Length: 141
Image (cartoon, rainbow, N blue to C red; front, side, top):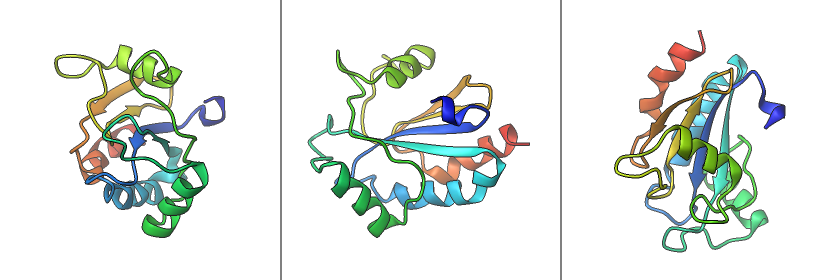
């Protein structure tokens, strides 16, 4: 994460076989719009929800690029819940718990982190990337 120091970050757990997968297109638009203003999206593929990310790292990356033109960083497949949850998700869930519990409920849960590394807001899976634009305008001034 140190390579993203000084940038606003949107962390997203992704899946290529999910009904919300078309959000990749909106996420890429946000990234293109704001990346020159020290903004980055970090995609973390996860197969913990109905096996909707069955592929390996190469097939996931190729699918994101070919189907949605994704150019923001995509990482290796991780767990977001349970004992093997990735450290960034343990931290984000602790800082920004969800409704009724901090557990990630589904693919495309999004976390916005400011340029100082402070988690600001958690967005539900159904929050469209376009709805996040107004928050980015505020923190990227």
